[in-house]
Image 1 (cartoon, rainbow, N blue to C red):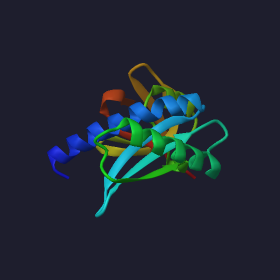
Image 2 (tube, helix red, strand yellow; image 1 turned 135 degrees about the vertical axis):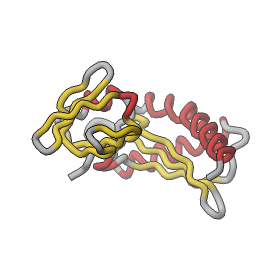
Image 3 (cartoon, one colour; image 1 turned 90 degrees about the horizontal axis):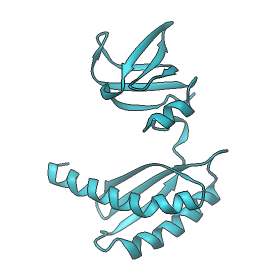
Length: 158
């Protein structure tokens, strides 16, 4: 994907978030992640949502219907798309400090932008969440990772 297309995608994702976030909040869902994937015929808009106790198929169907109508009405320049609403699953992304606090004690995978102890990928138990770093237990050792070095973080699943 070229730079121009990435910028268009990023702007589209922000518009979708502005429409989806109030609906999710009103219905007590957490908007975890939004992505737009270009396919041969149309864009695929994927929303990952969660709620305490987990997401059901009925939740996904309900949100998809509500959100599809809102997108069609509120986003004028929306290209042809297919909407997919689902749970983030066992490999849920960790997008902010609240996510890290919520999943303290869980197994996580973290990728960094710079090397830490000659590595960029870490899998371990999330132990400590500081103001500007996190600490994970990897192979019996605690490794502190500065927030600004984290480029991707997610639950490691089972």
